[in-house]
Image (cartoon, rainbow, N blue to C red; front, top):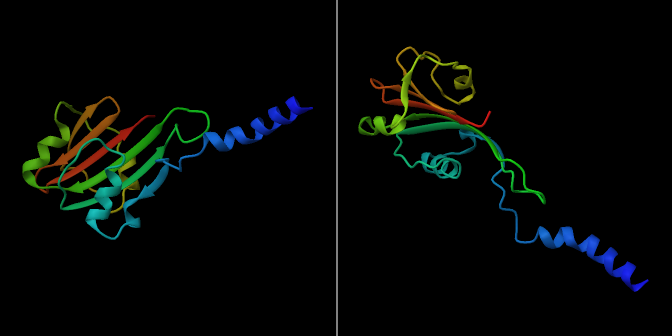
Length: 148
């Protein structure tokens, strides 16, 4: 009987013990309209991208499923879409190491708040799951990185 109680107690307590330490999940489905300032937008977005840039204006839609936020780890999936007005001298950083490509499927752009609808001035670059569009005359960058 004591063994049964011990096993039952452990079976009930173990999930709670494993989940201690707070919720550090990065899971989100958010866009930039939730934030009032450029600094707030940048701070939030930098949780999900590896690059650090300077922005004159910034908008995004980030969908991120943190595969490590449950009791059993799973795959992490993301869909990060960014529209930014940037200083002219930083435009080349956006597509460094990427190849110039033909205009890709651009259906993803419309989900970004304040993204332009006329994309004819953009040059497109690709690298696996990343697509970057640059409009040099307007100092604009469009960025898409996804796991799909």
